[in-house]
Length: 280
Image (cartoon, rainbow, N blue to C red; front, side, top):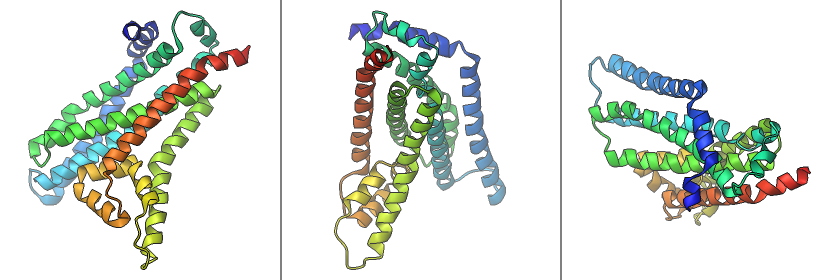
């Protein structure tokens, strides 16, 4: 355990990442996108209402908008940071040198993924001043903000582990990135499509009122659907009414994404040195 905190790979990755101009440009772009949506919403709300203030209901909408934009940015940025973690080293022909060092496979994978996670956490923290604008108008509690941040961190860890796993299994970075974005698209888009198919089947079969665990599962693992239930708890009740399944959506999401994270990291650690032997 002590070796994990004295990880030369992690220290090197952190130095390279935070000394790069691209990292600061990425933070600037991230904050600019969030600011455009937040101040654009405030401008439209005050213009349409003809007043100079925002009521608590509009504040909830602003909070939801800000949270969804942040989720979209994380879904977009995380694969780009992690899907090339190992494959880039392989393409530069530096992976074999890394593997002959005293570092274990776990330390290499841990160092690679941790540097990306630290940068992503910095993005979340950098966006906090914009969230403070929401608190000025009321309607949102600090507890809701903490829940949203916990949800974003769990999602971020799962996507990062998927990216590192594909980067370990696939030799080419571009193919690894496409595969990771494909997995993200499946989790955030195709699962919603499957859910709608299941619900439409139930709606078109008036006599069929049995529980629909498959439809509940598709909604449970969809990050967009879970955020909707976290922001509007009544949506969770509507989902229970549709599927007849009373298992909490957030609990299922947490179990599924923690399992995905552990499995992907396990595969990454196990396959790192196996790939090196195949290349010989």
